[in-house]
Image (cartoon, rainbow, N blue to C red; front, side):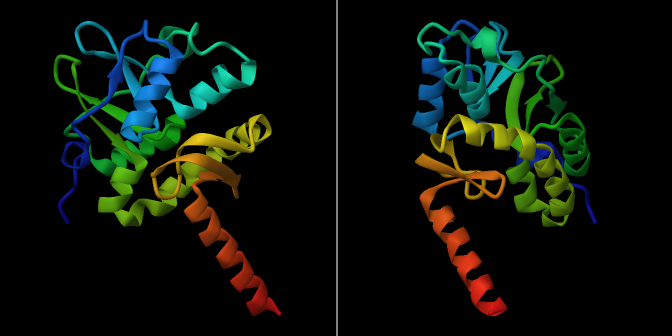
Length: 196
């Protein structure tokens, strides 16, 4: 069986930001594009950091900071881990698991950003890697439990269907939109009925 490279499954239309943009500007980009992260690049279009929804919640909202005054440079995760597009997806998953991340910006030979690949992208083409991805998800459970204490309902991208929602709820270790929340509740009711 032929190996699939991250370049084959990558998203090429990466939404980027500059290190001097405010948290509000970054959050607006996430909302506008229905995404869960923004790659921060320098003037050469080289990735120097990444900001996720969780960064905004943990580093800005939960600390009561004014998002108009917080700049990307101060809240981005750095250094950003990047890969080249010829890396095989199974190696990318191992790297994500090892580093506790869900997204990998892809760079060319000169270090310029050319794409991004997520766990979800890989799972869609290589479903057999789900066990490895589940291991990675467990690593985030503690972080997600901390987020639950911060806010019962937040805006962002659903961890299950990757759809943007203004009403994410924390359920069973993941942030879910109202539709996925109803699906989870429905399954729990069915399970209880089967047990009875």
